[in-house]
Image (cartoon, rainbow, N blue to C red; front, side, top):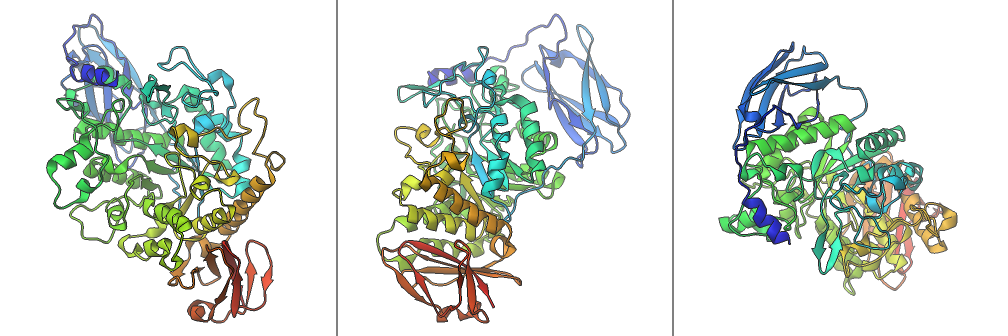
Length: 619
């Protein structure tokens, strides 16, 4: 079915239809603002045979610089220049053709609400899949007029009804845990039909197939719910990370039903999927054909690949990014499938966001397996021919090291976490990398480590005490588990207590088991300490060569020094501390951050089997 959709799409004929009346169906962006640093904005105007119109505008401080026609006569692109003196108000565009039409477009005044505040190493991000977290409004679970009208919690592949208000209702839970920022999987409308994958019909509940960039999905509560969520989060000192997708859009996107031009998305003689190989993008010896397939191949048949070399496409995406930050007030930008995008376009988009919102943080998903390749997709110190300007990136290499180190059977002196961090010199600022133990596309962390709670605590300790911006996938704090077998749905279960009729409520201590409370409290203890301790979240890092099956490092600044020592073996280890004198000199006592116990001698330390020790050194 997907192949037929694709073939049908590329054979669309862009024919001129004679309009009996001038009708404007929509203008994107849906509104704009006075006082933006960049005075220019390009409006996409859509309506039957609108290209036959003459367009005029008379508004003080706003100049219609150019009216541009494209291949499809149902579109016009209007280039505006908004003078800093322009006032907020209503612009009346006149379209003169077979029949004169006036369209009123709003220029808003910018508000003073927080926006583009960024996230930094001071933060602790919590990743939420909205459809699977909490359902506050069952009336918006499904709509008969949408391409996928079903919602069924008993079916792991369909929508379950979670919504944005459900997340808003649990902001106190995040604060208790020590979270400071919330990253929601995409909330933009996904009015996609179900797809047949492996014999099962599946919904686009994950959110990565946009069908209208300017609408939050009404099954999640729409624009109004998202606005209220961001404002409520800010009121509780929680920042919000927007999940962005530039590489592709949903096959059911409104614009693909009548595209401005055939090259709005990448076209191939026959359907061509991306190879999912990152190497051709940065390989100095790669064949152009391999690089083209990586970058221009479709991610899957129902997610067409956007042609960012088309200037109109590029402007459309960049302006939507700016509009989203300005309208909703989000603070940071996580970019899906970053490496599959045209990298010159990504630099343009990043720069536009950073110029308008200098504090915003941007970090993309580039799923690579080595440090040099990861450095290519972030600001780096390597002499690559292409210089990426992305401030941060998801640290997939350290994620691999975390999990491999916890599962290796021998030779702990070859600690993989140490080896990865030892190469941080390639990054301009490794503190801006976002670290994690798992996410919505992976086997869950607790399952990967064999449901070993002692290993769980070591990994959480590494995550919350080493460099970078840590992020936690929803439910990891209550030991949610599973593998992606037979599908991704297995690692995207509903959060217990978030839905009507749930027998257990894991949002409360009384609803959690003893093991779940121990896990929750472990994360909470370390996260809250990290939040209050600049040396731990923003201080320098010094690590020592792993010896005697232990890995030891320090986070420190002028005010405090924290020692982290981990023993992942099955035997207790006595750790002689004399070789750490460079960092421990002058300290003779320590407070155990996790137990609050005071250790009055530091000459030797006992490390129980499979344990992590976090000590605040004292004089």
